[in-house]
Image (tube, rainbow over all chains, first blue to last red):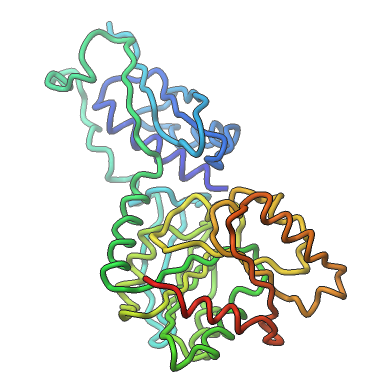
Length: 80
Length: 276
């Protein structure tokens, strides 16, 4: 139920850390005890990034341990 | 701050009400407003250079940078501050979690009545709507503030920070934080409490702990309430205890009925022995 707020937090972190560079993918690390539903998070990601500076940026998942729940990697677009 | 509010639609607000004065303050305005001003980078980027002195964002495009930024970091920071405040002040903060209707508020009412004169208790009530629970707590003789989370499914640390400013709990007191009735989301959100306590009731069935293991793993005490109804609903206390201990072997279990008072003495004396 809280995935919308989580997606918003991830988007905020990604935008802040990208410092204006164009992103391709944001990868989050999720542990089995993090209580995060990936399907719901992916759904919310599209909703919260729509018509923002990071619209179209994909959200990837990395398996982690315990209750890990972090933004682990940002992948940038090739710049012309 | 918009933060990790959860399940909110754009028109949502979080508010805090003091039942004594009826005074209501907005803790969070709706999100449409929050998001209107957090995009510092709305200006075009082609005319200046980001990241030149930033080792992480050097180099050509297509690169990957590593972060390990906690997604709940903002909440956790505020929770840590709350915890420090509670320790410094000598206040025992307890985060009470359960599904709706397990009898949290009745348990608190009876606890307040029984401990009156011995331990000062203040209560933060979390519900999506209404200040009914804070009114009940106040009628039972304790100070309370009500937080309404709107569509939000749990309390967060910043709401507790605001409520604590208003309640100003005194040294040696117990601060009961009655979370929104929900056995899922509140497990994730640290509020700065000393410990979480789960309340379940005999009418919910013995398997609640194994159906919601995250929550039962996050708590230190479990109260099994409505024991007076156990014979009528074929409640198997032994099986319930086994299920609780299966997900959390170290937990302390109290069987009681807040309505009849059975088992309340053990609960209250354990509360009285807690140290901040």
